[in-house]
Structure formats: structure tokens, C-alpha cells
Image (cartoon, rainbow over all chains, first blue to last red):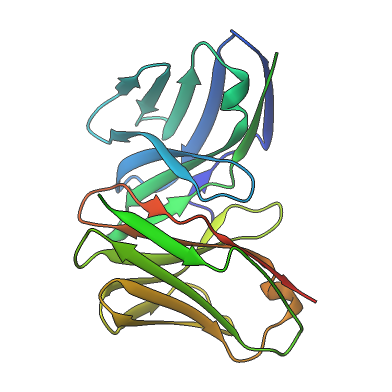
Length: 113
Length: 111
């Protein structure tokens, strides 16, 4: 039973355009949602997070939107840069345990020059 | 500042051999520690987590085990590796807030 789903395994975007990465979840008890970025053969690095009591959080080129009624969140990258090419993981915290992050399967973003 | 060390970076082991991956954290006390695995084409799967010395919780049944002999040391082990144990293993730590910090990972290939 996958509680955090990233239904798009890959996404290709032109440099300068907007990248939108989507994530759906099933557990309404999650308290925080996080996005991680991962390059090959490296550990994930934290990108941005959002509390379940908010609907938007912005940090530079990265904005995360949360729609609780739809159990959906998205990461917007504007403008996209070739260095943004990586696998992006959506993760959720809470849902009955404050110790464990539940990850989606990831979306490979490719930003073409 | 806090840092996390994980080694080795790559490992090739024959089927049936033992495994020991080590992870240490610096710059923080009493962290929550985690072992994740990323298998080919799959997401990050939580294997074990620990909220204190000697306290290990297992998420999935498998032939792997974990130990936490010291506050900032987390070890992933196996007595006999299987081919299906191949993957990318990640150690991570967190404190009370939401964010987890990951090590660089270990690429394990079982042959």
C-alpha cells in the first residue's frame, strides 16, 4: 500500500520553462511534506518542505503547493535550469509516526538546454 | 555543523557472504537514525530506524539486520547476502523536526 505516490516516473522540460512535479498521498494524518533532490550515486538532499497547515511555501526558484482536500502537492521550479536535472522525491512525515519519512518512487526531471 | 559519514561507497560481494555497512553522525546528539534502500526503478524504502541506542525498529522482513552500538553509529548487517539485496543503501539522521539528512550512500552489488 503506497501512501505517497509520484505517478510520473519522468519529466522533460526546456531550460527557462517551469517544471511541475506532482505527488499524491493517501494518509490524511501526515504533518509535513518534503521534497528531496537526488543525483546518481549520491544521497538525497533536502530541497523544500511544507507543513500540513499551509498551502504554499516558496524558496527562491522552488515553490511547493499543498491541496489537502485533494491530498495532492506539487513542486514548481521556475525557471528550470540544466543543473536541476535529477530525481525528485516527495516525502511525507507523520501519519501516526513522527520518526519515519514515507517516500514516493521519485520523478526523473531532465532540463534540456 | 552536523555531518554524516557512510562507508564504503561501493561494494561488490558474492552471494552468501556477510555484509557490514557503517554510518556515523557528527555534530548532534541522540539523533533518529535510518537505513533506506533504493532498488533499481523503485523509490526509497525504509529498512530500519532507531530512536536511541539499542532501539531498532524493522520496517520490512528481510535477511538484513541493524544495530546501534553507540548514540551516533548505525550499522547495517547481513549474515548471508542474497542477489536481491543489491541496491543503493542510504543512511540518514534527523532530530525532532521533519527534515532528514542523508549520507552519500553505498552501492551494493551482490554477484
